[in-house]
Amino acid sequence: MTLSLTLAIARNPHVEALLDGSVPIDGVNPQFLHVAPQIAAYRSMVRDLAYDICELAPTTYLIARDHGAPLTALPVFLMRRFHHGGLRINPAAGIREPRDLEGKQVGVRAWSVTTGVWTRAILAREFGIDCSAITWVVDDEEHVEALELPAHVEHAPEGKSLAQLMAEGDLAAAFDGNAGIGRSGDPKKGWKAENADNWPDLFANAPELEAASYRRSGIYPIHGTLVVKQALLQQYPGLAASLCSAFEAAKQQWLQRLHRGVDENASDTKYRELAKVVGPDPLPYGIEPNRNSIEALIDAAHAQGLISERLPVEEYFHAI
Image 1 (cartoon, helix red, strand yellow):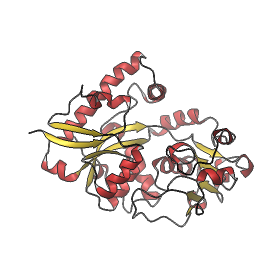
Image 2 (tube, rainbow, N blue to C red):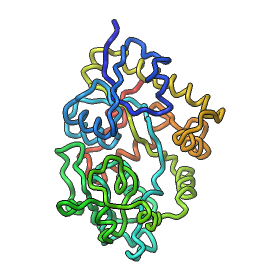
Image 3 (tube, rainbow, N blue to C red):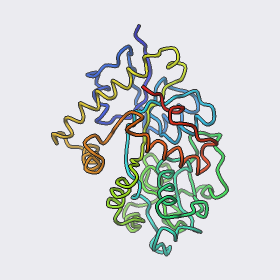
Image 4 (tube, one colour):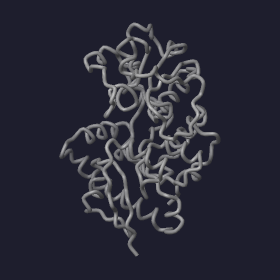
């Protein structure tokens, strides 16, 4: 029996062999759906169970599970990055060291955005920052609508975006990219790139700090996990293994090309640099190779009040 299933995943080089059909999924006739930006698929999945299988931000998944969403993740992590970089500081705010952020306002797209969760964990774990002493200003809705925000999180004033608050000097710091200013599809643009460039990173030596942090802790932040409707996993016990095998096979094809240094693109460049820090496979799948990182994210989500209880890894991720 072949299942016809919908899959909403972003187009990346390490899944291209799945998307073009050169790597099949045993027992599955996949209907790949392109959703742009991918965060729109996140919301559709956790709010309406819009797809059978979906690439989802791992923090969004943990929160959705905490609120009873009938989803289970597979230990397939489709995006990785470190998080010492990407937090821009206002030169006029007097931020000389991380602790100076306490008592200030910092912009992040949403409280639950995974980049923000990882960065707050780093600030707390490595620099002793009390993140509840920072006012976190958001200008977007949470993917899981039922999530209650803590008292130290505030919405930007009506009609104001983080970009505008940054331009006007109302924020001491703000995340760049999709976690904050300059994100794709922002309908409230108003921040010019040349102005953003005047805001330096909190950590000028972020790559060195990231490599040292990884050597100490073994934590390699996870992003973009794969979630499946629980009913499908229960009804078809072999589905999880088929999906994991196919995603691994597609990734192996990409890894061969990556290490040959051919067909260079921005994603390949990023992961080739990460491989210098984490080893030859910069996108490791499976629970055991990632247990330390998964547990670190669960701990951070619980400490930051995003989930009400901390469950074992195997409660969240389907073991193969």
